[in-house]
Length: 90
Image 1 (tube, rainbow, N blue to C red):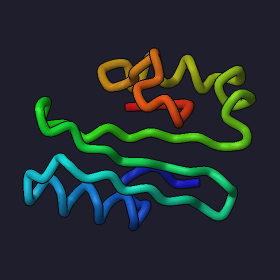
Image 2 (spheres, rainbow, N blue to C red):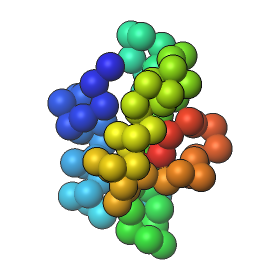
Image 3 (cartoon, rainbow, N blue to C red):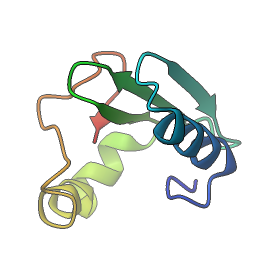
Image 4 (cartoon, rainbow, N blue to C red):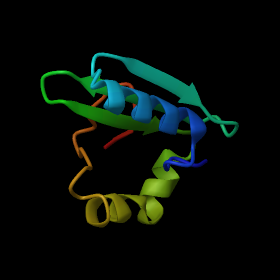
C-alpha cells in the first residue's frame, strides 16, 4: 500500500482541500490489500488528519512500525489514535 503523496486519491483530496482551505470534509478510500485510509479536516485547527487501518497493522507495528512513527513522524504521530475508527493517525 502506498500512503505517501503518490497515492492518487490521497494526493487529490489533500491538494484540493489545502488549496480551497476547506477543512470540514472527510475522504475515505481503500487499497487492494484491504487497508483503509481516511483524511479528515479540522476547521478550528486548520489541519488535515490522515488515519490508517489494515489487516496487518499489529504485525507491522510490532516489527518496527511503531518505532518508525515515533522517530520519523514524531512531529505528526498521534499516539492516542486520533480517529477512533482507525489504528494510526498523523
